[in-house]
Every structure is written in C-alpha cells, then in structure tokens.
Image 1 (cartoon, rainbow, N blue to C red):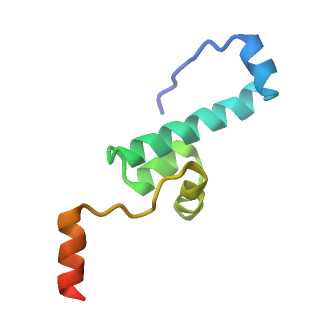
Image 2 (image 1 turned 30 degrees about the vertical axis):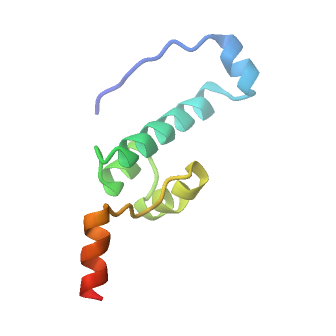
Length: 83
C-alpha cells in the first residue's frame, strides 16, 4: 500500500472542526467519488480507495450529487431499444 502525505494547516482543521483522521477519511471519500465520476475508477476500486464496502460507497454517491449509473445518450438509446 502506498502512502501520500499532505500537509494540512492546523487552522484548516480548526475551521472544519475535524480531527486529522476525520479529514483524512473525507479527503479519501471525495477523491474516490471524483475519480468514479470521471470514470477513472470502477465503483469497486473507488470504494477500496474510500475504505468502505462497495454497497456503502454506491449508497453514499447521492450525498455528492453523483448518479450511480450514468448512461451516455447512445447507451440510453440502446437500452430503450432492448426494452
């Protein structure tokens, strides 16, 4: 497992009223959501990055305004034709 170290000013944690552990979990979740939304990570890998089960990750996406399934117009048309 690789580690990435970020220097976070104490003032930021104080402003957020979070511990460094809480902030670390939030940063991991935000990164996982963003990379999933960009289609750079699958939901399973994004959940792994966030440190939570895949089902929990998928359930939490709505809090970030990210749809679980995002179909392109072509994929949607194909689904309609197959219905």
